[in-house]
View 1 (tube, rainbow, N blue to C red):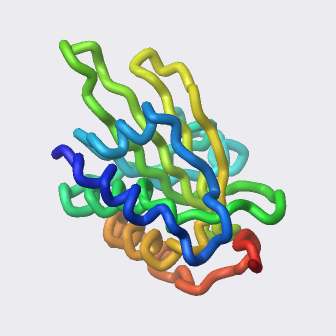
View 2: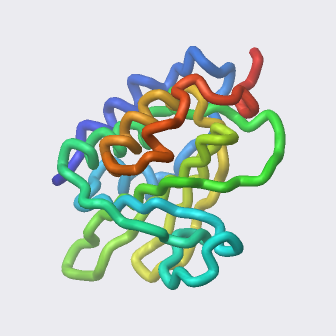
Length: 183
């Protein structure tokens, strides 16, 4: 699945009515990955301290469960990740404890592997962490932003990704307002 039109969508959505300034700008490499996604994986994640026996990790967090991603869910996840209206600058620091993550892959030309962008979401603090790695797994971008503008879409996406997860089913779509700018 290739999502080339998403780069155009991101440019069209550059004006974010929920925030006075963009939360962050992706480096060109990360934007290219998100605009040309070839595969998406999803993870239920948690703290390594709370889940010490789990071997798999996603950006320093325990990978508790993986999910099958349909092309429709992958497309929706990439649209949210590329949409600058999805994110706001953080207004306060706090503990980031994500519950879900999506990893977006793009195949590199000539069979040279793949590079990736991870989007981890903490619904308790309305925060997202985005991490990009090149084909050699070297991290070149990491940032955090508020995700209050996209909370409802992210919760719907999370529930569709993990339909049998009671914790996700019980999330309030309004949630805490700890990270959205009041401007």
